[in-house]
Every structure is written in structure tokens, then in C-alpha cells.
Length: 115
Image (tube, rainbow, N blue to C red; front, side, top):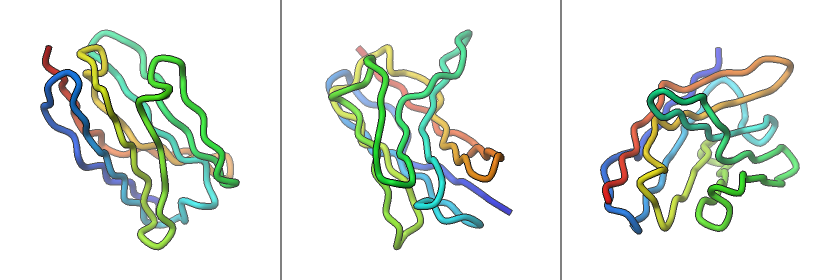
């Protein structure tokens, strides 16, 4: 059974940084598509970063140049480094694993950016 556990969220001032972690069990992150998504109140969940099994990454324009997704196979974890945070980055952030036609979600971690 796959489990994803996020950590690292919190309150930060605009312009600050946070690093989110997603620890995975039950599946190797390097063999799956790993992603970070976010959902703000009243809004749809949106992707903020993906890393593919071949190591390629993709970001939407809203976070490109500010967010970086990475993975550590030894720790079986995925990370999201968020720099130059803006109030509009405030949301619940979720880790996602896709593989074999199935996807899994973590429980989420709250990120709040104050102006």
C-alpha cells in the first residue's frame, strides 16, 4: 500500500522560502510520476510541479523560476523548494504519486504567505 506523508508547511512572509517534503512508502518515487499540487479555498486543485521517472520536470508559469521539485531515491522522498513566495501561493499543498494507472495523495500541508 502506498503512503505519502508531507511536511514542511508553515507561515512565511512574502519573499521568503519554504521546503516541503514528501516521504513515500510502498512504491519507489523514481519509478513513478511525482507531483506537488495545491488547492486554495474556493479554488480547484492545481499542479505546481511534476518530476518524471526519467528525471525531467515541469512547472506552470505561475511558479516557474521560483519553485523546484527534486527527489532523493535513497530517502524515497520528493521535495519542493519554494522561493520568493507570494501571498497568492497560500494554499494546502499535496504530494501525488502516479504509476500503473493509479494515483495516490498525501494528506496535505498548509502553506500561508503573509504580505
